[in-house]
Image 1 (tube, rainbow, N blue to C red):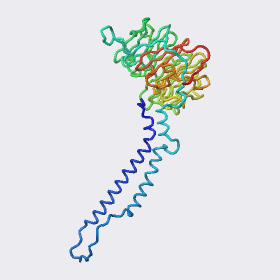
Image 2: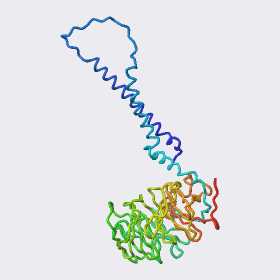
Image 3: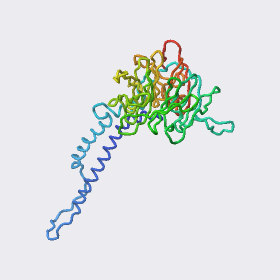
Image 4: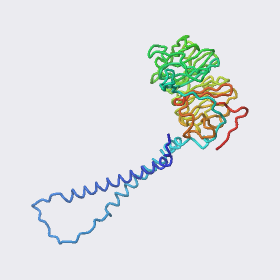
Length: 401
C-alpha cells in the first residue's frame, strides 16, 4: 500500500545522503576535538624546564584547521548521495523501484471496459454470524469445467465449487499428508473433463474428476534444481503434455502425461515465474513476476516476445481469449491488466468503473488466478474472493480518466 507516501519516498534518497553527510561531519569534528584534547592533556616531563609565557586573553578557536577535513567529508558524502538518488549509475535501480511502487506508468489510469456482475466473498458466515466451514481460507486459482466454476483453496488443501445461489461448497478436501494432499497448492487447470492440480508437497500432479474423486496421481520426474520444485503455474497443451512453472528454480518444465521429463525453458530468462497459459497456436505465455512482464515462448521453447515491462508491477497469472486479448492479474497494482494481440496496453480492470489501477476502494485487492470464457472474466482474489466481470462486446475500446 502507498499510504500517500509517494513524495516522501521520492526525496528519501537525497535526505538520507544529507543525513550521512551530517553524521560524518559530526563524527569527524568529534575525532579532531578528541585528538586535540589528548595532545593538550599529555604529561610533560618534569626534567624539562617550563618556558615562561605571558598571559593572553581568551580567543575563540579557529575552524581553519578543520576545513580540509570537512572538505574531504563533503567530497565523500556527495557521491554517496548521488549514488543513492540515481541508483548504481548504470540504470537508476532505486529510482526505478520507487517508480514501480507508485505505478509502472500513467497508462495504468486507462480503464478497460468491464462490469462486475458477481462477487462471492472468500469469508462467508451463517445466520448466527459464525464463519461457515466452506469459507475459502486462501483462494489461489480457479478452473472452468462443464459450466461449473471451481476454486482451489490453498491453505486448506481442498476444492470448492460455486453453487447456484452464489456460495462456495466443498467438492474435495485432502489430508495434510500423502501424495494427494493439495496443501499450499496454487496452480490448477481443466483439461478434457478433468482437473489437474500441481501439488507442491511431493512435486506431483493430482488429477480429479469434477465430483472430487481422485482419478490418478502423476509423479513428476524432472531434473533436480537448487531448491525443491515449487509449481506456481500449470498448463496443458493439445498433446496432453503438462507445463509447470517452477518459481523456486526460475524455470518452466514440461512433462509427458505420465510424468516423464520433456524440456526446461527460461532457465536464464525467468525470475520467479507464476501463472501459465497456452494460446491457440500452442505458444506458452508465462507471468514473469520477478521481471514485471509476461513472456511468450514458442512450442519449441524459443522466446518470441515480452510484454508489459512498463505497465506491470507483480504479474501473477495470465489468460487469453479467442481474439488473442491477453489478461494479466497483477497483485501489486490490484488490477487485471489487458493487452492486445500485438502487446499494446489496452487498460486495467479494477472493479470500480473508471478507477485507476491500485486505487483504494478497488474491488480487486490481491488478484491471483484468472480465466476468460464467453465474454466473461473470472478472477480469484486472495482477499476479495471470486469476482466475475462482463467484458464489453465488440472492439475493446478504452476510456481515460
